[in-house]
Length: 378
Image 1 (cartoon, rainbow, N blue to C red):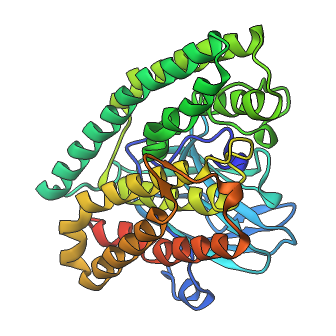
Image 2: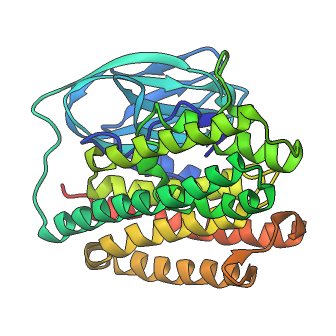
């Protein structure tokens, strides 16, 4: 996950759906709804044009007037993310649209993209987001829920083997299982991250630690295995803890609130994960197994899209055509780096090839940012 989101939950947390229109051009942002809530973010302020509004479709127009890149989050109680928009550069704008149920929330602007952010309380009134039933979308949600549970169920045995290898002092076997143990998590990361208390314990990188936070989880063990070449009592304890934390995730996946629009946003979020952590090589910086995570993120995003495709194609055929093309192109590119069931070590991928990956991810991310809007039921 992004180091900047170590306390994150996700879009899929609540019975709240969000449409994040990422990658919007300046021109597109300027054409956003006149009813949008203006968010003026700076290095020291996070000002909203109004802090109380009806439930349902909500648009936020963010203008970063500060000197640092910023993020904007809408948090439900417990810092569960309703929606988010990362990496809004100085002087630029971004549009965020969401369906938000009645309740109390906070909007946080995070200049420098760190910390808890500058927060404003907001109140959403009314009976909640409208939900016109589309049986195709209902079926898509049900299928995705089943998929998320299957991914969690399939993860636990592999993680247990990974932990057992560590406890046995078998570094070779542990290394061989590291990437595989993460596939189910990476495929459904937005759902996995929706449980904000689990994600920081399992998938935080060292530079994503909050003050006072103990470093546990996959990446701590990754460092021990590859960088420190050490398996001691602490690593064995951490391996057991990782299994425990992921079993907690497994038991709670079924309680995640999932909607069609949050599925679409989750797909886009997975591409953002690729762009910010995998293409850069930051995610698995010791094992260099980034391409395994990369592929899992893309697989999970594509699965969500395929479930939503019947509705998306009906409402926006060109968008669906573009997504088909871009997913195929990205998977073809990934396949070039596959060796058997695994991928080449990412430290063997040169800068030019990483740029090719980045371009392919961006080419997919742009139309994917429109998927949620295509399936929104108004």
